[in-house]
Length: 234
Image (tube, rainbow, N blue to C red; front, side):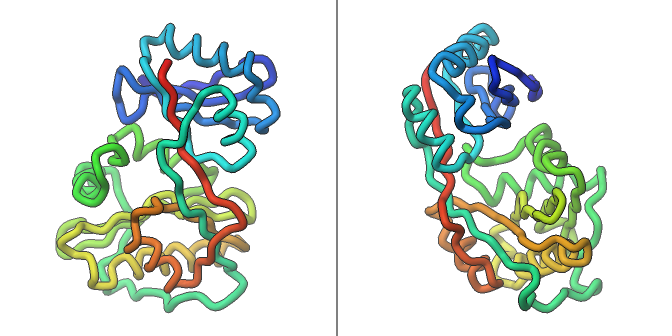
C-alpha cells in the first residue's frame, strides 16, 4: 500500500504501510503540532484500523509533535540525532569525478537497495517504495552512487528553498573506512551550496556511532533539539 494524503479536521498527514508491511502503518504529520488533538488522532487511528493495520510508527518528529503524540498513547520507538551544517562556512574538499561518483540511474535501484539491506538493520531497511519516498520527499533531489566497481554506496540529497537535507546515506559494510561516505557527503554539500542552500540537515540513530562520527568530522553540529520516532498499537 502506497502513501496517501489524509486530512482529518485541521490535521494533514500522509499514511500508508511501513516498508510494504500489511500490519504496520507509517504516519507522517504534515501540519503543526497543535492540529494533532486527541480527537483528531483518534479518527486517524480509526482510519488506519479500517485499512487493516495493527500498529503504527511515525516519521521522525520534533518535540512539539512528540508531546502531542505521547499524550495519545504513542511511545518512543527510537531517538535520533539531528545535525545541521552551515553551508556558508568551510566545506570538505569536493571529490573528483575519478573517485567513482556518478548520477544514480533507474538501473541502479536493485544494487542501491542491496547496499541498503547490507548497511541497516531490518526495521530501517528501505524497499523500492521507501527509496522513491526518500527521493521524492523534496522538490529537488540528487541521487548519487559510488562504484568500486559495482555500486557500493549511495546518497539521496534534497533541496527545499534554502534548506537542504541528506535524506539517506549508505556504504556497503565491506567498503566502509575507505572514504566513500566522506566523498558522498562532500559531494552533497557542494551540490547544495551551488544552489544557494544555506543549511543542510541530517538525522541518524543514536546507536549509530560511526555515522555520527562521520558527520561531525565533516562539519555537522547538533541541532537545538533531537527527533523521535514513536509507535502505538491500534
